[in-house]
Length: 283
Image (cartoon, rainbow, N blue to C red; front, side):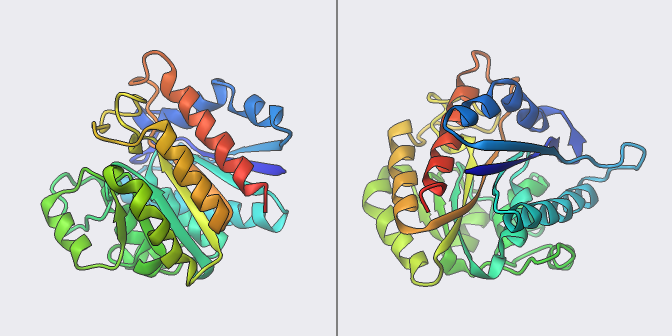
């Protein structure tokens, strides 16, 4: 399979810092070689903002989304499977726009719901609004500037491994039709959740925020928490997704190499990307 790796080495508009260092660290850790070993042809493209331009977080984040939307669409048009390596989860807005937001479901692996809005967030972290953006709940004017983006209906979104949810964010989730499959109920709840998405779409985007894993399995970033998914859980979930859908794009986000003191999280990330690519290659 031909794979287009799209690296977005930014965290909150800052290049190469914190989780923004993750994409290039994964490339240095041997991701390309690992995928080539599986028989894939790999191209790599790096997103770059103008270094001479003042980078405000919100402005820069949406500029990266717009760039990514065009790059993902170009990859799909060329018959390549897009794999996004990104510091922040909000890049999913651009990825989904490039894949075709109106025809794509979302399997979102993440310790956090990312369902805050500007009115509910207490941290002010834009990335904590990522799923709220893709579902059309906030930043609607800026999201509309991302070519090809349209909000994903709630019933096409499944949060997997999610367990760290703010109180106001929880209220928003309770009032939504977004499905949340926690780690403890993965095997009994995920098949039903995926079946519901499959009533609406055949294609799916797989979003892998590395902190969906238990912190003891992989030290992904400073936001990692206990009680998460095991590698066995991930294999189960990805297999079920691959059995039920065409995986048309994938992302690995929120990897901070400074937190990964022994390189174990990088190895785990590469394993997960290889699995997602293998499942995508079956269709």
